[in-house]
Image (cartoon, rainbow, N blue to C red; front, top):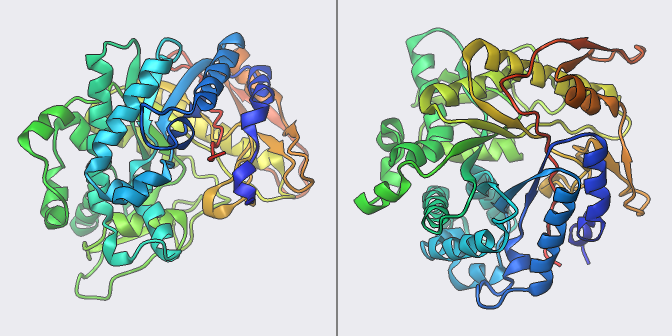
Length: 457
């Protein structure tokens, strides 16, 4: 058995995890359904009833602790049989399969869950995991097309949204995307143009169709020959197929115009690097870099950086173009063992204050803010080395016991005072210091993320 098969074992310890969320006075519990657990054969007529009952128990426990359930229908996993039969998201058949799966989930749980997102990070599903599959040798590179994958994923979201409407379930459904809004490296026309093309490829290619019914013009101009085309009927299904927009926000980007006759640039192989590289495939005039805490271009993903401008950029770019309510469905930082935990809370303090100032300054409609993550999780290619949890899990000792990380009063103060605690970035010898920056939160619901990673059992 692989370590990822058990992970944090939230399947058996979900009551502990929910109790932690309640103790910290969190208000929303975002969780993910596992398609593989519910329908291991990919057939809605053959559900795994133990899996079905598990999610009922999980949701009932949330309600018992006055937590609002926020369900994610699909979070990176689907039954192996769908890969074996038609290669999953590389096939149009996946749209129908997902629609039927989503209907099953909505029928089973919508009486208790009123807030939904369909597919977590479609751009990551199709770019990062596509890279992993080809790198590991499971799929030949010539047999994998990330643009086709995103096309089908977007249609699958829209079909699920229409099912929710047609069946008249109560609640709301939102689209989701990983977002790293880029700013131009200089004020030159060339850099500004290249930046807008990047943002439309990276973000607009997911959000624009579900709001307006088709890809943005820039996406069609620069990658249209690489993508399938939406039919007129599909455009009708897509248009207006979201009630709100979920944004997973971690970093900001910087784009400069590059002479397209020079060799293409490559990002170092990492999750974010692979995503960016695949999203702009074939567009040779974009030079992208992530942004560090000083707002400068950096060659590597800024893992241990506090750069809260990413929050403002993501919210404003999305709000100004789509004018739909927003949810920050993920935001967080991973620390390695031995790092000062005050750094984690300085990060949250900075990003939350950036969120609140953006809401107040620009009247952005933000419904909720969700942390990644409640507990340390198995972070895909990063394994257990990336510690995202506001509660630690004892992987090293093997007990998997949970323990709250300092300072626990950050979240409780936020809930009780409705003001973001100001936390200083720690110096090596500095003592902990928390004061309170009185940003009123009257325009937002403080809603903090608890994600449980569900692997196949």
